[in-house]
Length: 120
Image (cartoon, rainbow, N blue to C red):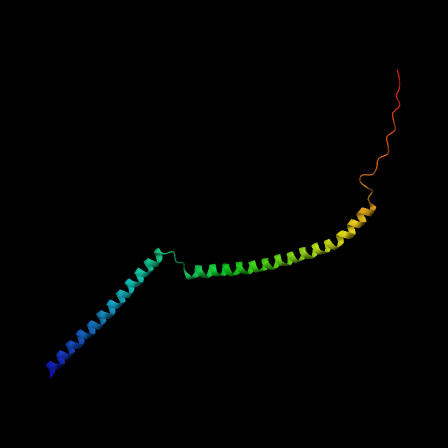
């Protein structure tokens, strides 16, 4: 019986070392895959998560500012439209007052007096 136990003990030792060897092989393979992926991603122009978040925040702020400026432009356009309508309504009144108070531009001239001729 003891010889059977020795055989079983040896078999369990071999199986145990095979499992630990496989575990170490898996660990090394994972490390190599990770290293290769990092090298390949390093060659591409990928950015880090922090850079992405910073750029995303800038884009959000820029969009917000753009919307504010669009609103301001719209308000200014409305003010200009209202002002032009108001000035168009006042224009006939102002023109009528201006023409009533002005003298004619090309009034008839008085006839010139004839010059006297002097003899020497």
